[in-house]
Amino acid sequence: MSEILTPGSLSGKNVLVTGSSRGVGADTVRYFAEAGANVVINFRNKEARAVKLAEQIREAGGTAISVGADLTDPASVAELMATIAAEYGSLDILVLNASGGMESGMAEDYALTLNRDAQLNVLEAARPLLSAGSRVVFVTSHQAHFIKTTPTMPEYLPVALSKRAGEDALREQIPALTEAGIEFIVVSGDMIEGTITATLLDRMNPGAIAERRAQAGKLYNVAEFAAEVALAAVEPVPADNTRLVGDTASFGG
View 1 (cartoon, one colour):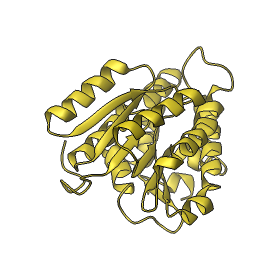
View 2: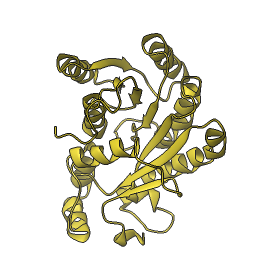
View 3: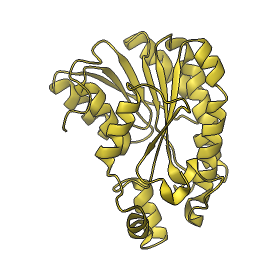
View 4: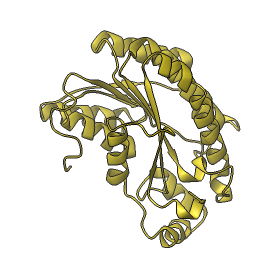
């Protein structure tokens, strides 16, 4: 991967990226590791991928651990944080990347449970590890961020609504986080080429991604969007606590 963050700029920093065994999360972890951070690769059921990624980072001279956790299970999240505390002692960057809701066989309220309730619980569980100067990054999509004013495709609506609910709930924590010296930023991107979500949407609604690409002029790929997420963790936080990536004209942004 090409350098996005300055090598060594995150030396000594500890970073957790949820849902980071593959896709945007995995590439975000790689950028942090290349900058010298001690990274935590979190997975739910893709253990082999997470272990392999951690091994690759260590072979390149970095520091990485892989820790499984079901983010919808508070006890599992508590174990995740306990492992991080034992291994690293603290967290400097928490990236709330894990999301879902389009998987088959899940309960009707799964999207809201994962995209809102679990996000809040992960943040709350991580608070003892975060201190003044640390940062929380929430990763979302334009289709969710702008859902109150711009309709999205029906197949994605439950996810969009639940992720917006998660964003709103997290934003309510900003005053308390600010008081503790913890920064917070939302990173919102358009549909991302090569993600599981894009693949599922195109399967359910053939041509949807091509149509969105034509409207936007360009869709970011996984590595490109991951770079924006990594940069959001270190660059100055905008006044509105939001980093918009890619086309926003279609959403009135």
